[in-house]
Image (cartoon, rainbow, N blue to C red; front, top):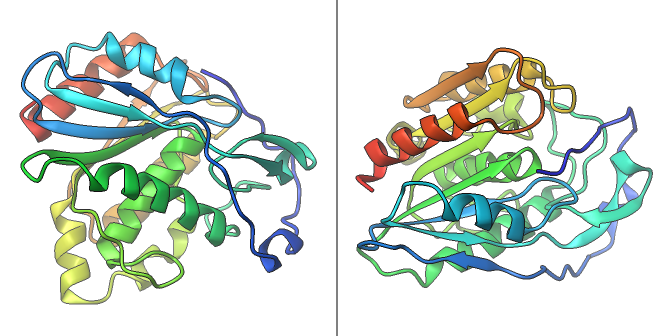
Length: 254
């Protein structure tokens, strides 16, 4: 999986003042080999595409899951000095405040919601991802709980599972103040979340994954599972993917 680096950079406000039109790349679909019980949109990391993950997911022993692997738009990324790259949103220096690019995040998770909106009504829906893709998946979880996107528009998907590998939640520090209504608290309490992080991650440091878990739990997400991997950097390992399979089997009866 592609790595990404986050050198120190300040977010420019210019990219957020003008309305941006984004064009998403190719979407890859892995059809279920057994009975279709769940559909999961899986999101790649910075600079990657849906193809590499679709090949890995196709080999997992989860025959009843359909995987949808979209490709992010190519956009200038502040962390890369403005270099254009496949990215779900713009990101500069990693932060638990913000998020800085609400418009980019909203556009990406609306695209994901659109991909899930045509699935059969009896199929359970989930979102997962790696690194920046995990950030988008967790942002989707936060919007699901609040019942709305960052821009206030209603969030339309009933999520049943969210997985984030080597990631973080943009705006995690402010999450607790946003889960205020009874409905939001109920939705947060109903959604199982699996977070996995390598303790030697040099790209998205381990503390971001650990603190995301803590922030989400304190905001009312009761079913947050956090798994750490000693000696693992910014990549996935077989043991981690085995745990993802076991967790998804238990949560989705897949």
